[in-house]
Image 1: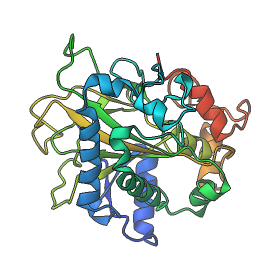
Image 2: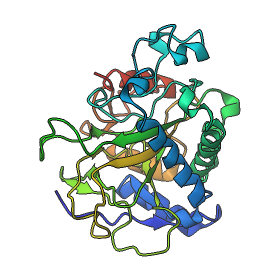
Image 3: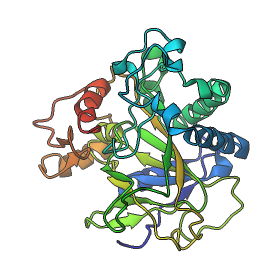
Image 4: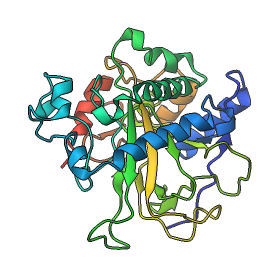
Length: 341
């Protein structure tokens, strides 16, 4: 494993900051990842802490109760989930995912899903957090991006996932087992919220080694209301740019107990994180955007059969002479079969 990468911290407080826009582009091209300075975001400390409180509240429920909402579980007439919506069936239950069931961490999630009863009282808070996530995703300096994610034009499939990786895992084998397997995200961009002292994310570098991505950028000190938001590029944004922007492969591991990229000791082997996956309208075609930068990159790389977009099942070669334009929905359908076991 290599040292942590120098992923930049970017201030997004102004939509007209050309320097910030260039820094975003450079980071997306080089790393596929960037940090957003939490002091420049539209989130307050209370917004983020409240979302983590909701997550902990749910994951601390008895396992039997959580299993009522487990992805693919049987939903009987005696279940409170069933009583909330008589149309819920086994195939429609896309909720809690237990350990060792999901091979990747996809951003896709069924839309318009009813909340479990234990979270209904926090529905307003969850809705507000999702709204703030949407606003943050749209603070990308591109009219093209925002227009393709306009919910008034159709379903987008944006999703919020509350993630918990417990410390106590029966049968855990140090140095071999990991928390979330290597994958790329399927959508446009992902926002990742983390807690201090709970590292574990790693990205695959061009030389095929794994580099840790600390909760706080390496060497950065400051009075942050909450850790910087980690943003990564997904497959669809990579499609739009013919691979210029990197949909970087990443994973989550059990971290070393004594370090977080040199910034902060790991306080707990538990890891809570919150991921918001931003996706375009389902009917959006994933063809290259009109851009001199993209055109120039295409001329250099488009016929290189070794260049692919996505990782694992459903990924495809960049070769533009053979690649057909697909829709956002089609891309998701091609990737999801490799996600669950």
